Image (cartoon, rainbow, N blue to C red; front, top):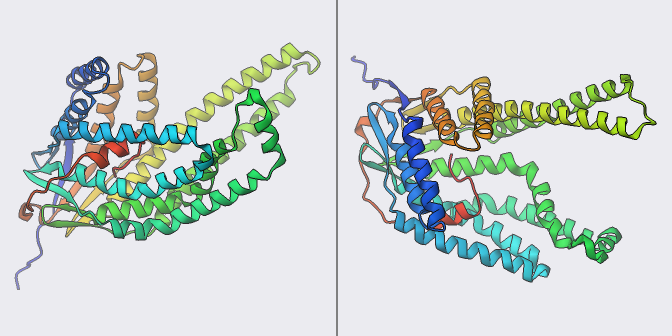
Length: 389
């Protein structure tokens, strides 16, 4: 019997963008955005994404970004207006700060759905659009329980702080300008941190499972433990670095000949050690970031499939870490002028280390186009949310 198994084609991605080309786009975007008081930023976003999409190739075909800047501008105006109202409501009515925080958190899943639907519907490959199946019920079934747990713990912690004597004393100090409501974001993030890997897992699973390329559905199949493993390795690695550095500094201080009775010499010694400590911690932090980026990207993309088609992501910690370090130094010493160069380098590395293993790509059929507003995407941008994969 003849073998009827489809032939697997391993197709590497390729990024052909050039720093000199993108610099011209980038500098014009910045200039016109400043001159127009931010109005041109919608066109700047479209020009940037069209450049990066158009220079990303798979099987000798590039991607396309098709969004209308006018729609993005309308969504951005609504988003900024809502953000301003939210901010001043927090300032004017601090007693309702918790409920404002809760409202923002509860709206987040809906904002994410609208943003992704707009982004996917305006992304295309081989003239076939990606799409995103909006399912508000499904995302709230996934996210509502962890959201309510975090909000409940935040409310409990906030209630306990209200009865604390030291909080009342701080509020009485006029120079401090302190309100107990200022602690709400810190409390929220403190209780959110243990659930971050789980929320990242839910978010990724939802995004992938709701994504379509033409009539081909995407799927995502790992459990949440793989996310916790990456986060825990990064966290404990960073804690170990801090512990080792603190121990080394303690030994150095103990063995130094600095006169403890000389305040100036002691201050200079401690200041020098603090500078070295900070530089080393931040420097090693780039390697933790490199590990997170490489491990997270590989884990996510290597567990995505479009039917029988899969990805093969091969990012490595050391090259990604070096890109982070060298890009950061280049941006600092060039006063920001090498930002385009840094972005091009990262995009090229990611593309060169990603492949698409296809059995059915040539047979994908398009779906009817749908119209999607930009409100969700720009509302997400206003709150500085990372809504992509």
